[in-house]
Image 1 (spheres, rainbow, N blue to C red):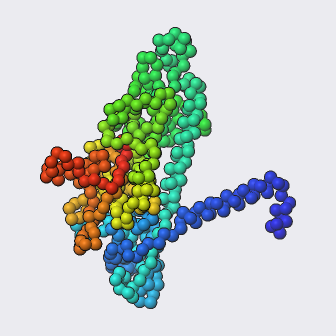
Image 2 (cartoon, rainbow, N blue to C red):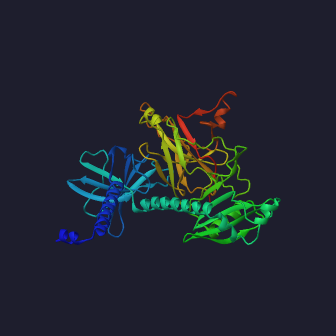
Image 3 (cartoon, one colour):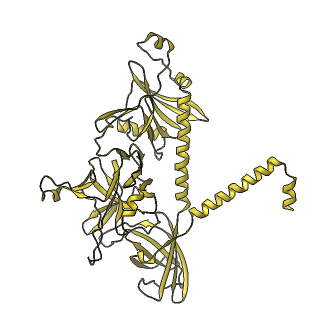
Length: 460
């Protein structure tokens, strides 16, 4: 019957129907692959903490704990646990989270399983009669975040193309005309093409342009494929940081990935000129004194012998309760040279390149790390603590190093490298106290590989 209905359709409708079903198959295939279960090695669980019978229904709660995220698993992933105990098989699910570490807790990641009353007795990790298996997969929240990131970048491209192609008509929205020394140019009364453009979300952008005497900034809105003028900042070249933050909060979107283009930028004390091409830059050129002395230029090509930090790379602005998708790439040659014991980690640097916190350990087989800004790990001697990241300007450092703990060292707890006395400089970690014990030739502790954001981004 279905085939006979199909035969009666016109050729156009048949093609549309085929395309529709192919699209469904592709979407379903993508979702099946994206949400495929990732097997967790039970041996990576370093502790199973019984939390007792809790709640009105007297369910049994257990915390499964890890020192490092299992391979392929990220924060926020849904973990499904199946446990066989006393000839009973029961299931539970929980979310992979970072632990609020205190002096009595040594493990950084956990997933709290809840078992129904009467169906389970506490798991013992080393008991051969007590066995469990676990798998993990992303949640729809993580997928939705990646979809928003994708469409945000696609929309930005459309806005940029329209601005470049339609500037002659767009500039007529400015309520006053330019003044040029050249009489012919002055008679035309057309504003020159913008020097700087910044997309701040909510379909709005800052645009800087000028004549022979003044520079101005205007706020445009791009909606329904059309530009409209929202606000004029006459005779203004830059804003103070607090002014800029207020304007973004009022007109833009605080959760938007701020993206900036400029025809020139001051970087490492040098004036780089891209004129007449508007070039994407990590610096926030709309803020006064944005130029920062940095120790490393952003990579233009993927270094296959190194680590490569892709995002954030400078100029972005985030909220303190935001989830950041940190993107990185591990060079093929470097990956082949490392061992399974070598560590690859993310750290937060302040404007002085001091390691102010540990973000987490990354997976060699993955290129993204989801970081909740409210969870920044700090080394506290024999232990660690977690606290929200203070507002300020930072860079992200990705590094690879040999572990402190080896098989020869018993009862060794692997620490982190963050320390208020430790700075990152050109591939080395320099501790100011340790340096006192060496002569002037001491460069610091050499890392296996490293990369850092090209310039500062803002957390507010």
